[in-house]
Length: 133
Image 1 (tube, one colour):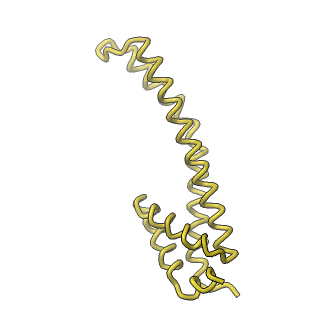
Image 2: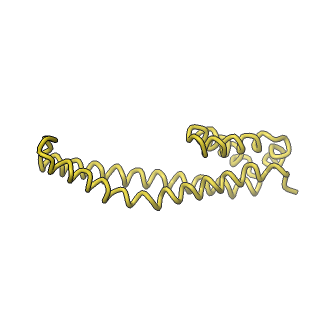
Image 3: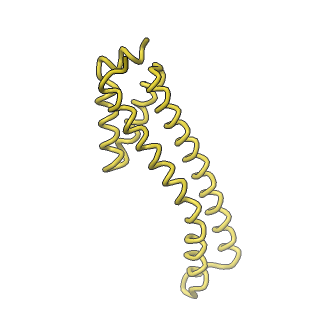
């Protein structure tokens, strides 16, 4: 039988996963915005940006966005796998949920609330027994 406070771990993890997916959906739209900002800066005569510098800025911005996308996608997959494994009572998943919660505490205010809920649920004795079976 699943402990009552297990939902204090699984529900915030699911919310974190959904928020991560929303962030991934928004990320591709940042490239055109960044290009238009850099284009406006390059056409401004007071900025001092040359065409070569603009091209280099676009390369680095594009690479940064791709790296951010890959890391965010990997983190979303990790959160989802942890969500599923906690529901199955895997011991490693409880520890992973605690790590996710601690990192989530830094994302004020939503991540902080979700992180606190996960920590309360993860340190519940019934959840600890469920995850150590």
